[in-house]
Image (cartoon, rainbow, N blue to C red):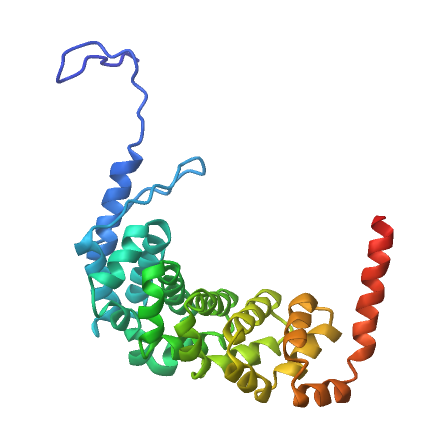
Length: 296
């Protein structure tokens, strides 16, 4: 079969007629459709295709927030918009900066589905994951840490997310708290909130190793140089939960750090004696000694 190799515009003979997909233009169209809620029947990408994420401008972020917070938006639409916002805030520093600084009510609008849907939101784990992932991405930007902690909705939401079944939601909620604790003034805010009990409860759970590790780290950061926070954590059951991790040989190092930091408290000394943890501590010391001599 003969093919026409003449360019219709330049009238020159084309020596290469293989079609090359324009990923950039395709991605721009996709992003526009996402923020404007328009349908785009995009061909299924091939495994070899490279994903190109194009940064949204101001109006694009605004449209995503409108879709998330609008009463007329379906849960599916809110989830899709939140997913795109989580992706954008993960990829682009400018989006994290703009989200907080330029949109004064952006946090409230992002969290709107949680209050509007009520208990129904618990049956939509993907929506929760996308919202908390966006919060975490925002918290990694230094200028956002204080603004997030001082927002009256954020800390209670993170505390609630730490109780969800989704591993991603629990982990990212805990990581967000750890990120916010980089600011000393936030330790007081979080220490006086429901988040401290949520962290302690998470430490007591042995089924999620990663989330428990992050919760232990969060408590260490939270209580460091804050005696009142230590007292609250101890009264909420920190000691037996840390001991439970040691006995189960899960997150033992972090739990040992916790015990070392609180072991001078009279209540803790009595609790440790009652819990019979001395044998476990000796077993860990013997094991480490054997490892040391084995390495030598």
